[in-house]
Image 1 (spheres, rainbow, N blue to C red):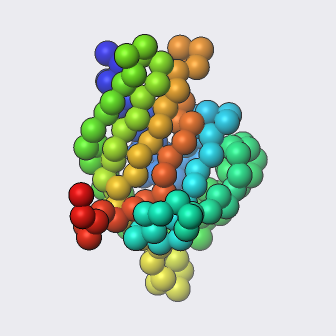
Image 2: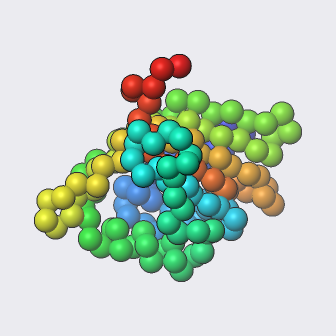
Amino acid sequence: MTENEIRAIIDRETQAWDTQDVKLLLTVFHPDMVWPWPKNPQAHDPMDWVIDWGRYDTDRWGNGWQELFDTHKLVRNDRVIKKIEVSTEGDGAFAVVDIDTLWRDKNDHDNHWKGRVCKVYSLVNKEWKMIMQTGVLDYNDVMI
């Protein structure tokens, strides 16, 4: 059941991106959400990461996503869930998702989010919320 709930929140987030629905997107985030972002998809070392928007704030994050939606066309948004892991207690989870999301602005400049993300969730008042996500990282050239 819990794995299905995590899939459902990922699907809701995907639908929000697909429809550029800021209100729906904001329903995914925990009030303490933070979102570190690598400077580029090859920046695997967190020393090279930044936090542009700070802790989740409905107005700041909503306005930021609305600005993206108003200035860019969504060309594609392909997402594949690779793994879902739920804590033994059933109150924490993470999902590994490969994404290929391409935004294009009015001047034909691309903003391409392509790679792997880790979405971290917490169960709060019987509702799953994303509390953290890594930015998009490319693991093609990383030796494991």
